[in-house]
Image 1 (cartoon, helix red, strand yellow):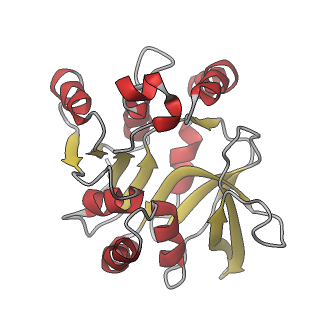
Image 2 (cartoon, one colour; image 1 turned 180 degrees about the horizontal axis):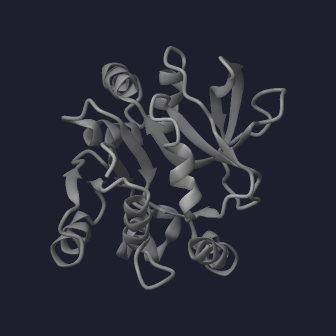
Length: 250
């Protein structure tokens, strides 16, 4: 196994999922036989990343039940401020005690194995995975500049016209951070949260990239989906999950 800590951000309240989100954390929603989190943990392990931490908040007891019954190796860390602080605070909770490389993941994702293999392909370089256009709704667009032979993160936004040039791709939700990047983010993160309690982790990564290059490897045809609402869940089940199953079978 690789010496990489996987950190899942799973504290969010899932407001846009309506009743389903009130009853179930998004990471514990399922399309196949297993929850999103279990599927992700299996895919990580298949790619050599076997050490997983989950930052909980909303309905944390359900993650505790999962760990007790089916996933005893999960390292659970609770963010008690999940209702009043944003995802950057959850990331800082997840990074507590860590100074080595970490793989940051959003918990409401389904993705094929290439996602993991691509984002950790260069262990010496931090990397934020991007895909081609998905048309899934609620996309986060990523802009990147050429630096030392690689496209490196400049900015991220849901506004596609935030910059005059065409975005490099769409944020997938898997980001690899070297040990240096982890230590730097732990230094700058608290001040960002102090200035804006609801700061999201994406802005934390953009701030990190100002002084620590974050490459943006792209898989144009990646099979993946984020699930923020019922329409996105239906799309994930009908259009994306079959492609993921096919990719696993190859």
